[in-house]
Image (tube, rainbow, N blue to C red):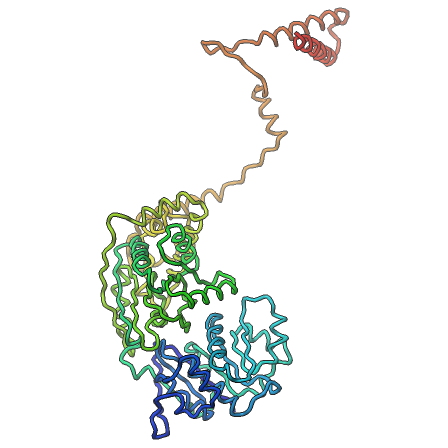
Length: 567
């Protein structure tokens, strides 16, 4: 019997019905679910003893074979809500390796799939099932395909799963008992079409007063300019040296830039980076390292915002405003997980701070942000230090320019919250200074055209930086219309020099008054050669060939040169 579990984000506003446990006995520990001894040993070995709200609501209907749409806030233990039914259903049917694939778990990201696979290995350590992980980023596709048909429980990302289903005939889903779509809030309507009625809808987020964890303190900092962001970021890193923290950025290029910058500044804490531009092996190594260490700062994109469970994360800083409200909830959900405490701060520009807190307060359940005032250091300014480092390193300067371009593209393309992201109000010169540049780099014309359209709609005058950029673009257009100059070959260049009366490779001497003085040795050579030529050519008339006379003069000059050299 197939069971589909869809895990939705905490910020979704889907109306769902609460289903209570049919048994009169309240569920206070995992043993009350009547699980097998092997599953209970795996749970106790992983230090799981008491189920959370989403686990109490989702595990009983999943074990009974119902289709489920489950929703809960971040950090509430949703992974265990489908890992336990996957192991227990196959154990009750005495599943063996010969029966093939019995449970399929689809994850949107590679890191989340890797995390689910790790949890399956921990909880199912006492079972005899074969577990498999199939994700992109690896080149051994044939090796994966040779083993994927022998797995009982398979964790996969959508792209690589479709590839193996189309290329491997031995990968069959005929005996599939459980299908899990993790983090499937974006395809909820599509999933419901294939579900059997009635669908068991579980929404544990309605049991809470807010969409974020209860032990989470949230706030925002109003930045007067873009240059304040690296200052607050540096203060955040140096002030949390003895903690585990995460800083979120909008683009991969920004993560790379600040990672290289802080490696040069040496803040006294380990700096790690995680973004989509890294190889999969490197991403997995960084994930394992950040899980293992006690004190570190992870610079990352939204790649690490959904579903990843990093233990003991104390602080989350959002350097760039999130693209939508759901992303904000997922970002701050990396801390204060499983009834722990945590702190989350988002850096907002003036126009962002006027709109984003009110939008978050309008969610159901709401998210409340409190204004936070932080004092910046006066004696030491990281922006001035940043300018010196970028000016001295050409490679770092190139990374900074690419980071600015990608940031502007991303900022201009955020369509869901148009009232928050106003690209025409960005001060481009301040943005360049925040990346250590003294001038604005050349920007894509598509971004500038979007800004100009927004400025004309809102009847706002463009700032000086935009005028300079528009002038530079017009200059580029005028120069592109000009005809290309012909390339000069060596022969053509030599003819041009000779036509101007210039004799190359000749030495000219000048006196004190600046007049040219003839070289006496060269004059002696010319006079001696002329005498020899005149003596030999006395018998010739005026009709003699000039070329013969020139040859004789050159030979005579060679003779005189040899005589002078011997002297």
